[in-house]
Length: 412
Image 1 (cartoon, one colour):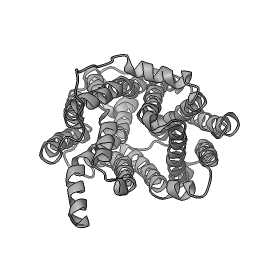
Image 2 (image 1 turned 30 degrees about the vertical axis):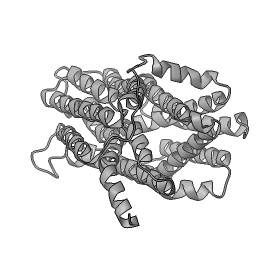
Image 3 (image 1 turned 120 degrees about the vertical axis):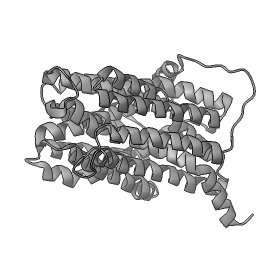
């Protein structure tokens, strides 16, 4: 078979998988501008009764946190499931869950129901393990000589999701740009694209992984994986460093839109553009800087300096007298964040042999989902005191992770 035909076969099979990665990366960025307008803006009209600022902060944090905590538990179960019933069936479950979750959230926004919105986020979060399964399936269909290239496509579509998610959320919820749209429109869009992707999966993707034997699921799997991160001597120190880094990053990523709304009175569209520009920074980091730096410097040094840049950029946003400086530093911050994440994840991977790669990637995912969830609630309460406090926590967490990496980790 010719090289051209091989490429065509790969892209035909990988198209629904790459779209899954795009949808997953799009999801959070799409929602943040909408959540700010609905929950944090008193003129949003979502609540029938007036709420205090403290109550709005808690509602915002709970809506963000519940998604990530459900992801924490669901991803482990879905990962086990994909190793037993196959990638294709597991991805169908994920996509139908995403469809149901987004549809329920859209209805909730339309009828002004917080309970339904949270229920939608629970369903979407619990079935959000599709990205890891899709990545595994892409590796399954990759030939050894094209594996690196295909992993590059994974990072590309991830970055595109981070860029276009906020833009889709902002544009499709702005009646000034598209007549007749509302805050529910981006959620209906996400539901429809998830359903279309399920159809593409049925048409284009053939099963790549099968295991015989009885179906066995471990409901406590997520907790077991999380605990193992801090009890295994090979990754214990790195897990602590990663936890502190994610604490800093989740405080920034989850609350920068709230900061822009309360400090600079940004509109939902302005917030969506700002987060899309941050997504461009992710793309630069993933697409160019990580590989360039990894070929020239030790991974430990890359991680330390990238985290230090993140902390410095967060500090500049805190002290900025106006929004201009925030616009100027958000691309360097996004680039440094993606570089530090990739470098630290590679250091994680290097601690164990080939047979333990799934486990070590699983613990990094478990730490991220758990910290994002808990941080969403805790920092939302602290934001009652100052809109700048979440960004201060972000700066402190990222800076502390840089110091811990420099002085608390020895190359092995």
